Image 1 (cartoon, protein in one colour):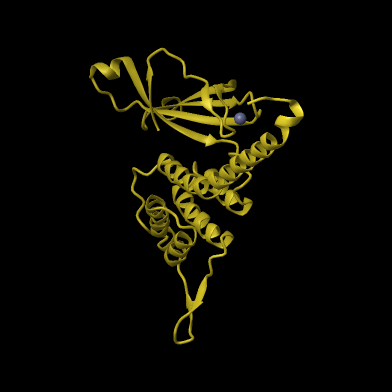
Image 2 (tube, helix red, strand yellow; image 1 turned 135 degrees about the vertical axis):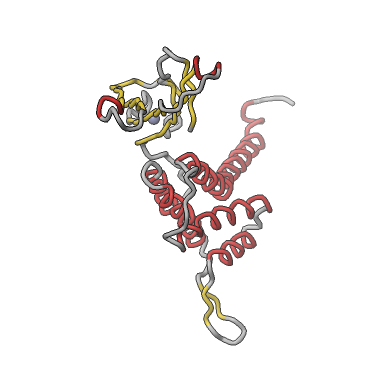
Length: 249
Ligand SMILES: [Zn+2]
């Protein structure tokens, strides 16, 4: 993620922790690595490291901001601001809603863990989360065709069965197949070209899309059920209690 910082201004400690807390975190330590101090002839870049602690869950977050100082531009903006690339090197595992099966949540957590080291692995794990989703939803891996032969069902066909079974909307169809297609490129071809532009930001977007699907499939359903239960409880109470409390209409 690109990050513009005014010269002479300190990095903010305001962060959103994966636990959900958005606040000013406690900075445990920070340090700067200036490449020229170690290799005067090499590329000149400056990395600012920060170890922050969330005041709510007390877990730590490690961030790195890197500025490419070889790139000097005379524009007005660069004289006032330095452009940094912000990377999350470590973050605690995000707590997902209890209604999401833990087998799926574990795979998404693994995807989050590999984000700083391998975008490719992150993409593949997002696709794996969809495979696990089909398994949890009892979508079969094979079917017997009209000739009596056992046919293997690929993820595309299994997702279509799931979409049909759950009567899911068209937008969800597009998102689920999109995640599958992106994961396919790297799952089936280990040599697939990974564009240089792909960074942890893109994997985080894909993980966000997986979360969107899980929220629609599990969390929304669970919340709707909870609301219906609350409404029924309320109706029951109102039906029973007016006489007892002597309330008048
Ligand atoms: Zn936290």
